[in-house]
Image 1 (cartoon, rainbow, N blue to C red):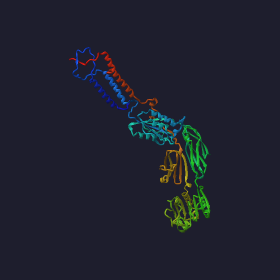
Image 2: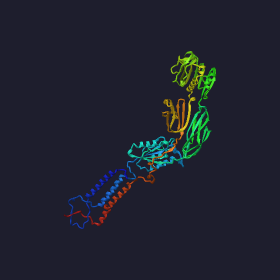
Image 3: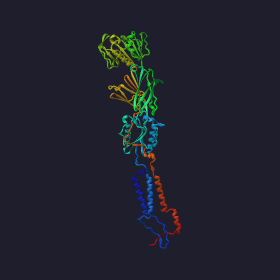
Length: 635
């Protein structure tokens, strides 16, 4: 029992004060009594006031006891006693509702989350009215849905509005968050209630370090399921117009399953394979599909299980990147090996007489001539005339020795060839902002320039002359130039359809974080870390994330739900189920109405039995003689 308005000490003090006052009134009675006598012979007129004396004993003890009892009941009613409440100050409880992806599994007419909601609502009814409840929705992150409050309607609404997410449950983090919330008022700490299936990763399956006040409201998690775990795509290194596709399928159930994996591109069949899966195991299917155009690739399982959300993945594939290079030369045969070796380069050769400054091309090559109208886009100048060169020519020499490459420049990356004697070369005088790529002893003989979004490379020597034709540096240099001018052509694009949550990407240990960009669908940067050769970033919602590292681009289509492999095995001492108070319908009972009624009845009985009411005065009048002058007994 607890008291709503007064503490036990205040109640006893108030009852003691009132009881002392009532007893004092009974001992000190200043009123005159009516007395019927047979004669007035021995009575004389009361000329003087009657001397009053304090009573030394109570003449009506039954009336006194009845009044004291009635007043005690009324004071107790004012104190507001309640049955069923132990802690008068109220306690704080935390309800952790499992809203992970697995809670969307079908169960009868509803889903697992519906069962967890019913358990949470049943527990909410068992909580005393004065206690406060916080609701936490738990998946990969623990998110508070309400603060600690005694408003049951708000908590119930938050429970009913909860929906399954796309990430896996991080149970350890949810318990830590609940403990931190309770530490704000440790003297009022109540229970931490987990309502859900508790499907977690293998690392948390045996989680035993849980708070002592945990209560488990478990849902059925033993559901058979086969789903897509990961889908990876990349352009084949031997055939750039072909996609290599890897599909990982996992059997989460306890019995073997057979499924068909089917691929469709633009709603046309692209491949199919049959897989036999052992219990709690994973298999991989490999496909090769030739396609240059952009479109959507659908990967589907024909499995019918309790969790259909991971039976289908839709991935957007980009078109094969390519670059159009227009070469104006009088000797095109010598340049064809440099530009025709890459299937992603569309090389068009023409004579200088047909030069068009407005030609549609990603790169324009001008071999040993300089037109009056400069190219509007990216251009490569091979030994331009000295008076018309984009970069001033200081002098022209014969038998120029190639001494070194600028390894810090992007175009000089990977070039080591030295001690090559060129038949002839132009020595440039670079302007501010120009980058010298190669040095011929007397000065730069290869310069790159970037201004107003246009990129230019000026050769002071002919790269297809016999001195350079057989050098490995020549094709590598041209590849660097094309990669710099048209980076999308040489960018290695890898696409992966995976699950939301934390993503690990293998990178070089010496990767500079400033050269890495992690972008979401709106091209907004996402935070990431690089540690021990692993790049990590977190995405809590389905979407597409791009990781750009120089010429490498990784596209993550995080659309598959994250389904953990194991179920949490709680320690033996964890309390389970909804408390009996909720099942029996036992709630707090207010006693003050009954105490008030009993106290009023007691005062009424005392007034009727011992009070000088009108009814008793009428009865005394009928029996007694007519009123006479008040007399007092003679001494």
